[in-house]
Image 1 (cartoon, rainbow, N blue to C red):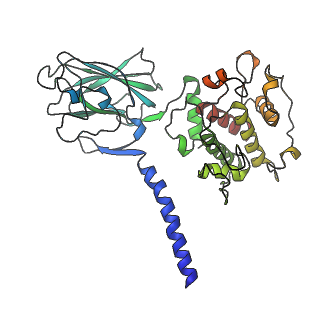
Image 2: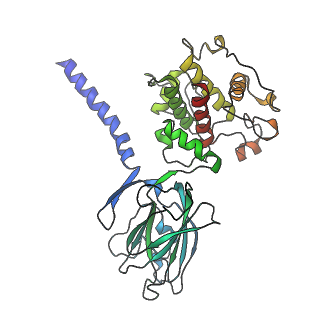
Length: 386
């Protein structure tokens, strides 16, 4: 009887520990119905996240709680006919919004405008990826409206900016012009540099993008925690096996499941016996070392991190990098193994930029890997070493 009670209690505790993660996952998406009753589910970071510029129309509203363009950011939060939680453009007003993701042409509508208020005013909608070249994709006519990129933009292009221009349908009254509560991308991809877009598509195809980077801005530096999750995905692809987390967590500052999987595989170390420092930025030589361990763990029977020195890799060293002296001893083999297999390339001047060596380099992130760089080398590992 006691054993049954203990088992029941353990089950309840396990369920309770799972609930916050499930609840957090639920909050990463937002579901709404359009004016025709069609349901859409989009990532919460698929909504506009920054105001690039705002030129109020003339006339504009005198209601102060309808003058802040930041009210158009994030998920729609207008309640009834209240004046707050939306921005009034004014007659002919122009609002430019930025996104943390990139809007793409997908099935059906791709951009959705939440226009609210007592009147239904129209806006011209344009998209851009550089704030220089704009493509008109139609008119948001009425309180809520979806627009399709198909046939209106160059094929395959992605967009991080939306420009709304009031068409002066209601140039008078207390709130002249359209009242914008939110703008969403319905079909989106993670934001990435032009050079990385093909690699990001491959990373998605190979299932190398972990949950922690889903719809993230890939141009930003990658953290140790995020890279550990990429390393786990890469291992699972190379080995066709599932990684399991360590039973005992040695880290006082991190309990992330993917980190514990990477630690259990032997592909990551802590920054001390009891710390992982999950939010620290990853250096290029650390990336090379971690992914070389992934390769060894997936392909060399018996390899362990503790016995790594007993498993040297056989490859022809390429010419030394100009900053070879700055490469840490623990990472040297990994750096040249990756370079020899065209997985991690150097930078200008035949340098590798293994780590930041000055405060100025640290400040500018000289040797820090970005999320898209990390995923690009993971893609190359899968393609070149599998």
